[in-house]
Image (cartoon, rainbow, N blue to C red; front, side):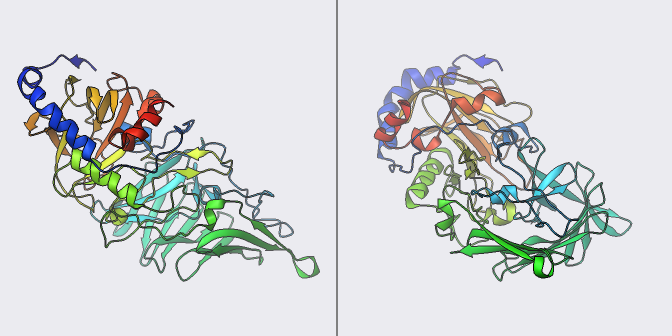
Length: 462
């Protein structure tokens, strides 16, 4: 994209307005709440991009490394366990325990979510390349029978209280609503008629999987965290039982999580291998700081892996960082990135702002993701920074006090029309909008840009 030289507006800032405001601007930045919880190093990427409806969302979305294994099912030989498990099980069970679904793998711990305003169901699956993808199923009425099609050959049919997903190979997944109000998979039937049933606890955690021969997989929990898996197989005197412990330090931590900056509202289900199991006061202070800088009154920012609680209905999928079975960090959509919302439920409209101090900016929003970049010799605690703002609507530079309004949140590239947000990323150097492949190495964690000087200095030395 072509870069634009300083406009008359910018020249006026630098000659008249900017000198008078720079001191007060820096004073505001230095008085903002200090931010803790900074990772000790920049997490390596090495991930396959998740497929979402637009380039910006796709590049930064929750991904899973190919090193995450998927366990193999044994539906025919009753003398062997129902599923193969390694001797040592790490913390990535949420993504590893999958069942074939068309060209994808479906993680059985995931739910089928419904967005009422968009009239879409959302399902997370794993691709053959090892990355996660979010499938949208849109409402279509076929001969009076409500059915939902995806971009693949899968079909979801509405059968009253249950939903059926049928794949091109004839496998049928049944989803039913449980105590938490979510749609969980309750049965899988393959084209040969072989059936596995899934049972859940009173709090809608996966409790047991069984087949018609009587083989079972039981899931055992400690403090509501999955801590071991027990399998029983065989018949009569040949019946065997074995328990596999899950070797994951995080699994022993409390699972109760406040995903919110604002309550009450439906929450998101946290994966057992999430590396940040709680939303801390320091994270809340960081998000409040960023919302104040970039949004209007009542704005909600998400830069620490946790989104507003109201998105439990709008976008109920967890998008923070995970730990794979091999101990590697699996970066999420909100790793080194932030979202800005106009309301806790992600539907509010709001102005979008950037701080003064940029000396150049992109000519216009990109055609796909409505992304605009701004180059700052100094931004907050750091120097030589490019800010990229995705999903900008009504782009126009309008000075408002110590900030510049650049338009409104919710421009092109958002996954669904009723989910209004802007996505912000910070890059090292005067980069313009880097290619999708280059962004991971250039990103700066937003919490360091306007955090304490000590944290920022440690970040620069990495």
